[in-house]
Length: 112
Image (cartoon, one colour):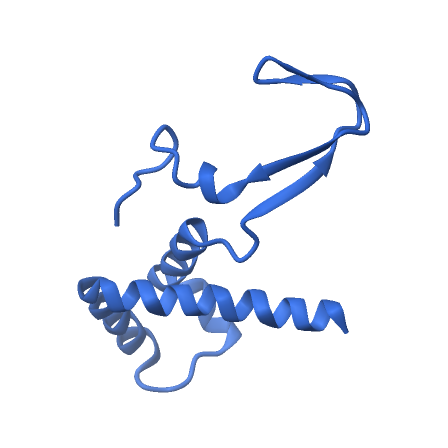
């Protein structure tokens, strides 16, 4: 049951942030509507349409970059290693904030 609810929550969060960002950027929303109208002609999308909806995919990916449903991820070091000059022994839990990494201007253009 937890997996079912967690899957719904993350999907709902991802879509909520996408709708929020579209509301903040009407030109992006207009371009999305244009893509949907030209590709679908007013009919509901099917899974076979998804590869052609590239702008829609970009919007979802960008909104998930800015507002990931899971803001951090944890991993366990499988061997002794060094990260950023710090010694990390095998078995140590290491957490990464994707929220912070996805806003780092060294890797991403931080504006829409």
